[in-house]
Image (cartoon, rainbow, N blue to C red):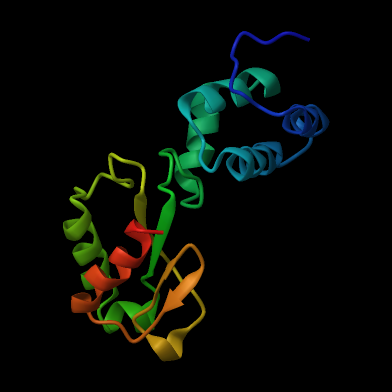
Length: 160
């Protein structure tokens, strides 16, 4: 079966889509797999999912925009996740996001730096409430932070 949209899906992902395309809840499962394989869901990937499942592209985008888990922009090599759960928010989580974006030259609409080295995203919980405010970079967790510490953290990953 040839498709007009080449989204660069692996054979395993193509098989997964074929298996799931007629099952209830298929879009969520398929979109999770696409993002797992490609780290985000590009326009081409969304079009390919719509084509392969026989679903309107608007429905695919509706699912993608409803669930905040799905990313439509490619994340940076170093993924900065800043917790905005209650404890972290109250202790300055938003200030950490603002500082990271300022230091990296990101506007509020940008997710990733133009060089692809960093991306900044808010998350609802990292699970370290006692260390609030918390952020993680590629899974490395930093707690009890103040925005003045952000430059030092970023510098560790600029050279890595």
